[in-house]
Length: 145
Length: 169
Image (cartoon, rainbow over all chains, first blue to last red; front, side):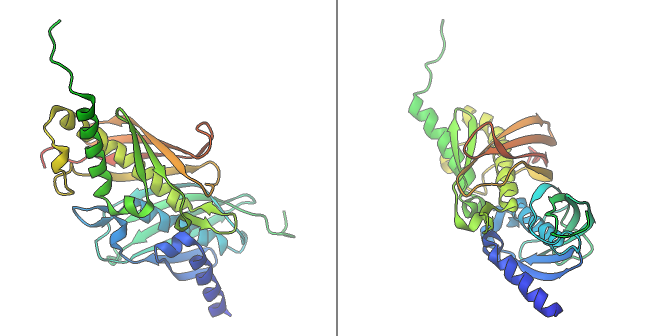
């Protein structure tokens, strides 16, 4: 059953054309926590001197992961849209390494879901970026109001 | 009145457009998203032509929130880089004809970036302009606005802080 859900979720991610364009891969998804990774890709370089990936691509990963965390939260199932997203860039991602984002939907109200996320490359001790965001919540039919 | 003859207009335009083109062409990610720049004097407008690969939700369909964020961040960085090279370009210290990624001025680094999603991005072209609110020796603060059909109806705006490249290499 859990495997079926994971498979379905991966298909959903792949159905998002931009997530597909960035070759995003779903690593984990359950109870308001999502992990999505993205391989290093020369098309995403933001600084040709260093080969470092553009912050915008990291934003796209964080945004997708934040949305996925909201969608798998028990109280906020369904479609969601970003209201706001703030990203802090702590260091440049190391060229050549896969970037993995982990987002947690830590609070849900009737209309808003609050998310925090981090992005790591292969160095698991030093995050590349951290994010906080607010997302819309579609009220589930029949849910207690 | 005894001032030097102004440069021919074509010489000025060619210099500025060459510098701008070098700035955009050197960055793979800008080409990946398909972003181009339009220039009026020193005012830049970034253009993101619609493409299927920019879609987040195929049901609506809407631009991916990450694409919107990336478009705004690219616009902010280009505006900063452009303002950094303007003086050297106009004084002749920097020759746009010989610019390569290695000789281009270093790119400002994003410290933080906050995107305010005002409405969903429609499947059509988007435009953005950045305003540098403060540009110091080390830090800069930039605000960006993005719209689609109507200039007054923004679909997203953002504020970011940037670490400026050191001047002496």
